[in-house]
Each structure stands twice: as structure tokens, then as C-alpha cells.
Image (cartoon, rainbow, N blue to C red; front, side, top):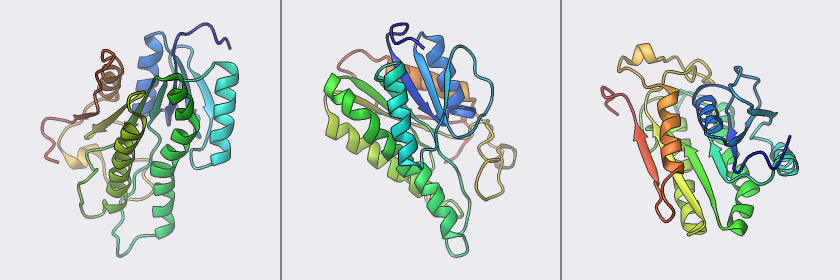
Length: 235
């Protein structure tokens, strides 16, 4: 562990697999020190990415993550809020305890990280926060109300953060469509898949490229929202 090895540091939540893993590996390949915060061990990551066990639903674990990162590497300039989980349940029949878990991960998890890591960005007068959202945001659909609501809230939070931190923090929302990952397999409940949807899928690496594009705009320019989906996707 060496604070002086890298000029920039990034935190990627939920980065042990899927979109988060692709983002972590992309940033690391560009000479950025990446710390992946995830409660799961996940897949083997390329490069010298640091893995740190962290459950974003725990304020105590977020505080411990902050202390460990800043002590060993310094303050991150990039905060990638990717941790999240899906759910498919009908509002009149589903389990509110499961809904609560999804909202705690998808919304409160991001808020806990924002509260921990952005104050120093403001103090340092620079930083980038990227929210991995979904095209489900603002799209009510049967069995998708809880997940869509969580991503809608996340996008409101992102815009609020942008307004509250002008001009110091660049805030970007990346909203993927159908991505070929294990997302549907890891849903709390529901029975869906890329194959069942039948509209094709994009790769995690494509979303990682979107993130890298947003992080590299010239000073004074911000990319605030990117939507990427398969051409055949109709929502």
C-alpha cells in the first residue's frame, strides 16, 4: 500500500462482478488506484485492484471503509456508486421487508457513501461522483415498482448533489438498459433473464467506457447523464 504510487484514487461500490467489476478494471487500466467495496468476494479482478469487504447498508462499515482508504491511500477523487440489487414483486402481493432491503441498498447505500466521501471533495474543490442507475428510473411497470422507485430516487439524489456541490463536484448518472450480467440471477425475487426479454444486451465493458468518457471531460464541462441500451430495447 503506497499513497504516492497513484495520482488518483477511485472507490467502486459493488465492484466484485458485472458492471462494477468492468468499471474497476477500466479505471485501474488507466493508472487509477481502485478500491472495490463489496460484501461479496465476487470474481478475480485484473490488475492491482484492492478489495475491501463492505456492506453499504451498514453505516459503521462505510465509516470503516473511509478510514481505511484515507489512511492507506488518501482521499479518492472518484466515487462510483454501483452497489444495488433488483427485485420483481407485485405491490399488492410482495414482501415489504424485501422492499426495505432493496431500498436500503439502492438508496441509503449511496447516501451513506456520499456523506462519507464527498465532504473532502468539496474541501479539495474537485471530485467526481458517478451513479449507476437504470432505464427503469421513471418507468412504472408491473412487478417493477420497487426497483424503479429506487432508481428514480437515486437520480433525484444525483441531481440534488450536483446542485449542492457546484462547481466542485462533477456528478454523472449512467443509466444502462439490458446488460449481460448476473443481475437477474441475483435479484431478491422475480423470474426474468436477458433471454426472456428477447431484446439483446450490451456488455458491462460498454458501461465502463461510458463512465470513463464522463470522467474525462475537460475542466468546466460535465456529462450529467448517459443512457446506453441495446438498439432493440423498447423501454
